[in-house]
Image (cartoon, rainbow, N blue to C red; front, side, top):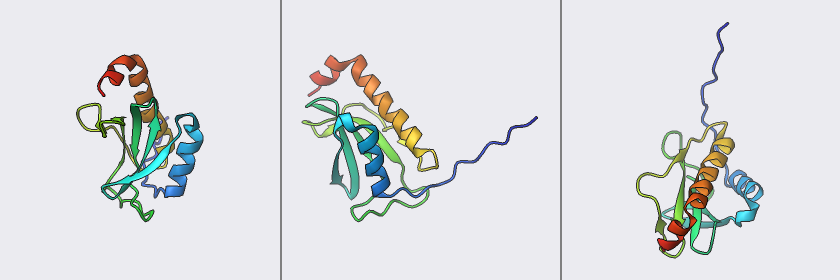
Length: 125
């Protein structure tokens, strides 16, 4: 018997949905919203020096990027340096019906990377 796979479908994500998800799922990391380069981002604090930055693909007036034009990105970020701590492109989360699960996985991946080499990430400041 063949299994039918469901194709990923673009989902419009509002700023309210993103805020609600991050503040509920990652409350202990004290999500803080900010704006840079015309895009709202959240910093989830791992320490005074290191955060997980979530670029939302949502603009300052709450409008999300259109289909195929931008994805949610997640990266370890040096709070004092104000720059990413990992080289290369930030892992993405596609804006599909499963965005919450995918975003949670990417954030947890960053948490694990930090915890495995905490002294290293802290020393990069």
